[in-house]
Image 1 (tube, helix red, strand yellow):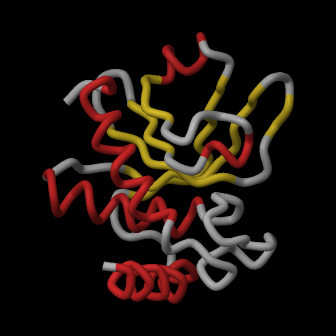
Image 2 (cartoon, helix red, strand yellow):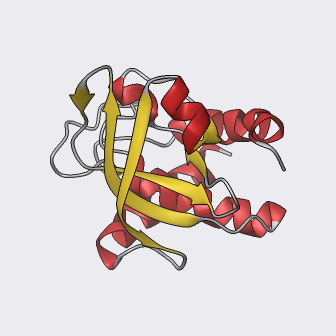
Length: 146
């Protein structure tokens, strides 16, 4: 599936998951305002990694690192990558840094748009255990809103 084909699918996932964001699902270092992507990147990427694999058999890597946008580094950020020849970045919380709600493109495409993703840690399996309690809260909120 190309980044262009993935974009509508990811936009649907973004609309679904943002309804469940709260201060309880946000990283401790942020305010976690309702419907705001701030502090939601780790838990959202964990949820999306599971959904993409379960719903579409798309295998991703959970990546932790930084993003360089318009001459400014972001604080630690989490996104997914589809490990193919060109490594496709999948980020549905990048708008907390001024990117679009859904970022999906190869490293080359994103660099040409001025966004440089640098992964310092990645894993193909489930993310570290610190995300799990917030992921459970996110799942519960999604079930309650269905």
